[in-house]
Image 1 (cartoon, rainbow, N blue to C red):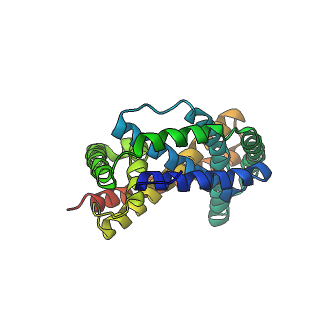
Image 2 (image 1 turned 120 degrees about the vertical axis):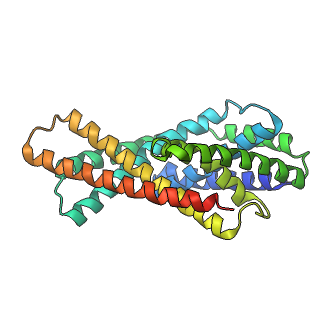
Image 3 (image 1 turned 90 degrees about the vertical axis):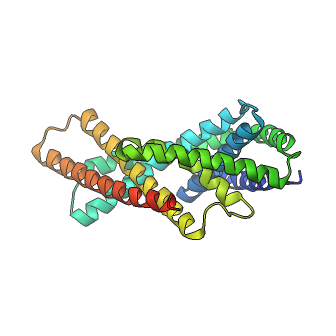
Length: 269
């Protein structure tokens, strides 16, 4: 199909990226391929949401198959990220959390296996169906009409984000989910005259900091589960794990401070 506007052009690019990384995962689920496939899925989902807002057509259930692959790769990504954070803290703080490290490594291997199995069993037909639908749905719109409708949606989302940011610490996760779509839409626009370059850079830093906060949130959950699952009672182990908890809490608080500054810059006139 020939893309006629910026949404369909971006859609086709992400479908190609999805296929490319799916083939890699079927052979070996590398960290880079998992990351790139997940980014492609996030963008595909964001364009489906944009299409829904513009045309009022529901998202086809065929996306559920893609979402299942996204969730499976997410498990691998989360364990690998937690293992990487633990390695960083162990080296920097001279912490020996050997058993926790081994558990994370086992989970990394297990989730890579799940990713490979899910990728091998994935049927590409759902991508073809979704592609036909979104092209049929949006091909009649002019570029200018889609840009104007996208702008209105962006303004609406930004206003909601500003309200949520009043209670930032409570709403960090919600803000992160809310801002992914507008970022992808802005990057796809042929001419981004909505946000000037300095504010766009603040937007990118904001999403980076939100992502770092989320990684530490996930690490904290895995640490809590580990303590409960293995019923940590030895004083030495408990001291180590409490030190890790303290590090995570401090880093998350520091990131909230940065996120607040990023939001202020993003929403500045």
